[in-house]
Image (cartoon, rainbow, N blue to C red; front, side, top):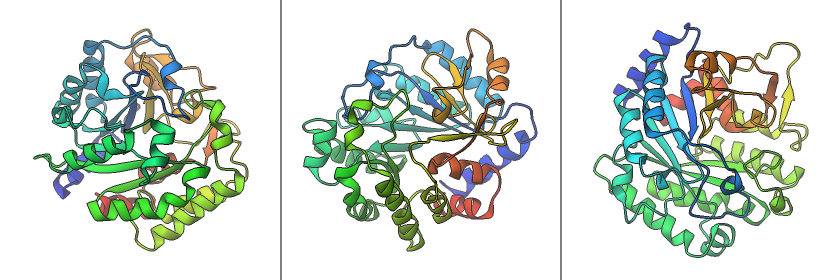
Length: 336
């Protein structure tokens, strides 16, 4: 991200910071359907109504008006929606950074899918083709690698990242993946496969890290970050996650009104327009819907929840950043 973009987003943050509704970062699910069937993912089995193209466009314009700085499309596989390019254009036209998490399998044949995208997060769990294909399907590793190379050559040069989901089989793959990313100027997000949430398939639990393995992973990430490796978050964020007492407990309830700023500065929007504080609360929070209840009602309601804390590195880094903690702000400025 250029300094000019950073200053523009900083200005938007300052203008809207004290408004009653300011979802600065939005994670939005376009659909649950996917052209792959990864071992740990149950998204394709979750049936839901989908917002129409016009409903999304109207919602995106609203988000632009209340200060949203970044919108990240997720799925399922968002690029298989026929209106994907149209919706990405609407995001950019609203002055919002447009990001997408994708398995990349459509990109080689349709690189124009990324024409109006600022950030592309490719799902890739290993540099070993056999490990990737065992989890995601035959031939997927090659398809993702090819898609990354196509994206690196795009004229508008979107920022590229890899999201690596770690299980027992690929815990040792973090260092090789870092070398892969360093050679291509790609950022890396590493997270454990987490079960107990609707979109993870509990049938894959035996593949997951145990308590000791999860802690080892986070503390390894902290050490690697302090060594200057291109991981997404500050070392303190990983160290905090490494100190979580029980990884089977995904969240801790608050005592009284939650001090967590998820739901205020960050929201998760489901494919049908339900608005949640974050994916961690998706099993317990009763959302309001942007179509049924209206924008203001849905985005006001989501600010009030009972989750007090979690160990998720991504969410905790966001809390630190929007809470203007120095380490997180410096990491954002360094990373761009």
